[in-house]
Length: 441
Picture 1 (cartoon, rainbow, N blue to C red):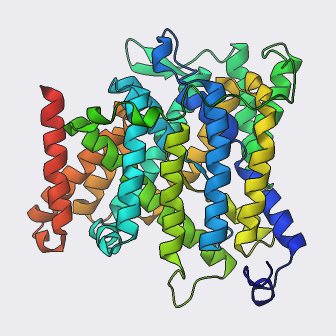
Picture 2 (picture 1 turned 135 degrees about the vertical axis):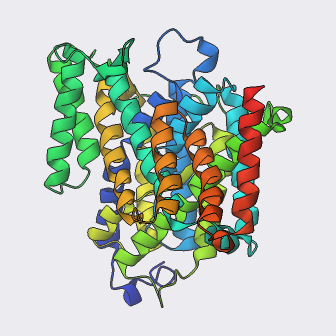
Picture 3 (picture 1 turned 90 degrees about the horizontal axis):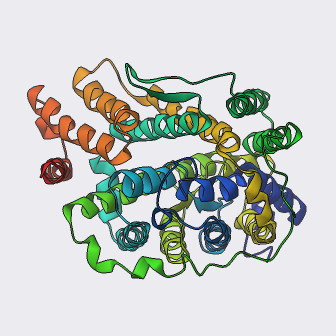
C-alpha cells in the first residue's frame, strides 16, 4: 500500500493521510445536507411533488457518489483530491433545468449521465486539450464568477434576505423575521470562521446555525441522530427512464452546460490542489488523464444513483494543508462519506436558513475569479460581463453562458481580432443562437 501510493517519495505516512482525509471530509461535508435541499427545491413553495427529488434518496446518492468518486480518484489518479456533487451544478440542475425550463428531474439526470459519457470520451481522446484551449480564459473565469453570484442569490432568496418586490423586482427582506435573522447570524458566523481560516468553516457554520435555530425554537429538533440508510429507490436508475426526451435543442444546451462547467471546474480544481501539494512537474499535471477519467466516471455513477454532476472539490486543499499528499487521503475521505450514510436524520434540521450561509460563502469564493479577467480590453470585458450578470438576473446559468458565448465572437470580429477566436467558439455561438430561437417559439 505504501509503495503504491509512494508514501516515502512524497514524505507522508498513514497518520498524515488519515488526518488530511478527515480534514477534507469536514471541509466538504456540508454538501451532504445542502445537495438534498437544493435538488428537492426545498425553498420553493407550492410546487407539485413530481418536481421535487426525494431528499433521503438524494442524501444517499450524494454520499455514495462522493465515496465512490473519491475512491476512484485515490486509486486511479493517486491524488489527494476528493469528489462530490458540485455546488453550482446542482443549482443549475434544480433551478434552471427543472424549475425554469420545466424539464423533469429524471430527464435532467439523463442529461448529467450523457455529459459524463461525453466527458469520458473526450478524456480518452486529444479533443480534451483542443476544447480547453478553444475557450478564452476570461470566459472560463466569468462562468465561475457568475455561478458564484447565482448560488449566493439562491441562498439569500431562500433565507428571505432578498424578496420579490413589485416596484423594483427584488428588494431587502424583513430582517426582523426570526428565520431570516437566523440566516444572517449563520452568515456572520461562517464569514468570521473563514476569515480566521478555520478548517471546515462552512460545515461548522451550518452546525452552529442549526443548533441556534433549535435553541430558539425555529428548527425542530431531530427525533434521532443515527438511523438506517435512506432508500435509493426514488432516484436509482431514473436517468434511464426518459432517454428519448434528450434529443432537443433545449436538452443539447443543458448537456453542453453540464459538460462545460464540470470540465473546466475539474481541471482548475485539480491544478490548484496539485500545485499546493507540490505535485506539478514542469507546470504540467502528471496522470491528468487518469484523474479526469476518475472525475468523468463519477459523473455517470452519480447520475445513475440519483444526483447532479459529481466533480473535484477545491476543499481538498484543506486536506493538503493538513499534510495529505497521496491518493490515500481521498480514500480516507471516502470512508467518512460512507459512515455519514447513517446520519440522515440530521437532514431535518437543514432548512433554507441553515443552507444560506454555505451557499453565500461558497458563492463569494467563486466570485474571486473576476480578478483573472482583463477588464481593460472592452471586446473581452463585454462577453465576460454578460456571462456574469445574466446568470443571477435570468435565474439561469445556461442563459449566462449562452449570452457570453454569443457576444465573444461578435466583439472579437468587430475589434479585428476574429482570427484569435477558435472555430469551436464560432460553432458554440451558432448553437446558442439556435437555443434562443428555439425558446422564442
